[in-house]
Image (cartoon, rainbow, N blue to C red; front, side):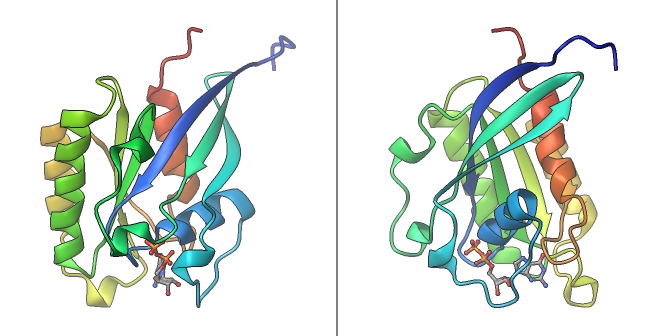
Length: 175
Ligand code: GDP
């Protein structure tokens, strides 16, 4: 450490994706370090904060989870308005959830802040034997659309902190 105090930056980050892909589980793993096998979507933290340190800066995320509202209707743009970052989640065992994730990417690119940092997370990577979306499909789509891409597992904790850290690294730290 240089001894200089790190600067702190705060950002709003929204989780998006089809119901049951593991959004709440990823947030709870990241914030609390726990995994709940029988996570009920509605228990999902609606609003939590957690920090990561990158490039000698403390990045504090205000994390907004949908709390299951995506089951009933498309989310109000209010939910992602003002968000500087988003993690769009799909389930690698569910091709439909990958298509839904692409729809969210397009919606954010049309409607959200122009400089929003978006990560695509292929979750449930521990279920390799049930995989239906290949790693390369996710990686290629992300590459073509300028997204961070990682396959994650809230269950094993694979890449969970990493996806938040990569987002933090890409966010502007100048205010
Ligand atoms: P949400 O509706 O997108 O917030 O999804 P949840 O976090 O409620 O998770 C839905 C279900 O998938 C729950 O039964 C979780 O335990 C399970 N789940 C979430 N993440 C993972 C994961 O990484 N691996 C496996 N195997 N199951 C997961």
